[in-house]
Image 1 (tube, one colour):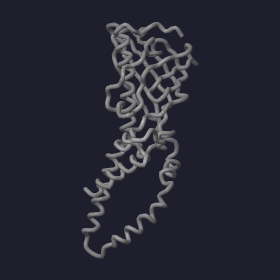
Image 2: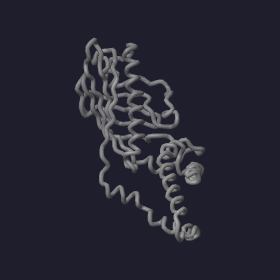
Image 3: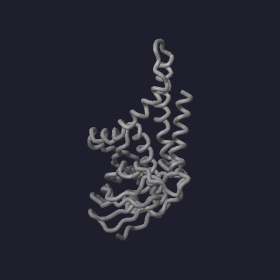
Length: 261
């Protein structure tokens, strides 16, 4: 198992060195890679310990490289066989000490957020910096600016001051890879993660407070879905909380300016 784990470590360093991947994605994949490697190491050890004729190590060394071309395209075939990826939902909420009318104005557009302190964002994950909106009502365009670009969000529901729902027409890259090179083009950063739509829900509470809920629906096409959803849900929740906390600070400090359209 130690040898198997060492091989995964060296492979991870190699793909970073030749600009196939960045550090963030290698670290995310590491738990899965180490688990599979240790399982393979255990199976290999069990086979070589069994009694009876053994397969020559030379034969194995020759057979494995010849078998690898047969796995080319397996992931793509698996994606086609599974059909459309399921849509997933992440929900986060916060309580703001202000009435919904004031919170609504800050939801529409909020001022620049301070630099992130979360390790997740400092490691390269895209994070929100501000939001701005043009127009009013259904059809208005909201731009949620991130460190890597902007989400373009056409408004689909404008129920002031209770609910703002939008689709996602454009989105930037989800992360900036940590790498010794200026930039790498990791293929899984293009088209494998898609935010489809989102919403803010404001509910009036006793004492002039507001429960502010943020929801994001998204899809990703990285297998195994259950494993990678742990990461994607955590990232989206962290993004939600950065925005919600920023809105709360702004509103409770009296900084939510009147929306002019």
